[in-house]
Image (cartoon, rainbow, N blue to C red; front, top):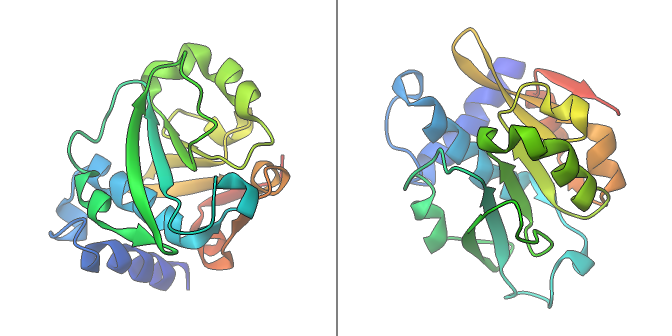
Length: 179
């Protein structure tokens, strides 16, 4: 069942035009970029996370070094829930309150605890490939297992932020914790 869901989820970003090659040969960061887009489809934000009703935009933010290069550019032409997607690159001193998804780059590891503490409880989906991210208060962590990108999800952190995550996304997770 989990393999079928992974294929369906991967298929969503293949057909979205975000990636256009064989899944097994895709660079790791291209797969992660596809996941970031799909998180917009499988997570619901409370109304107060937006400045206004649609067409108020969705903000995807990259904090620290950008591992995706131009891989996220295709999402800028898309809308999700009638909202246009905007991409922002932040440094650690910039506020992230306008972000709906915040990808925390590995370059921010020394500051991660402070960053998580600053936005804890806010409707910002935090995502990273930093080791043990979900055990340190992050919401979704990318992990490699047998050369495949997998997800670890901190359901407790997601709930406490007011976000709703699809059960389909939870089923994809390699591990779900309730911290």
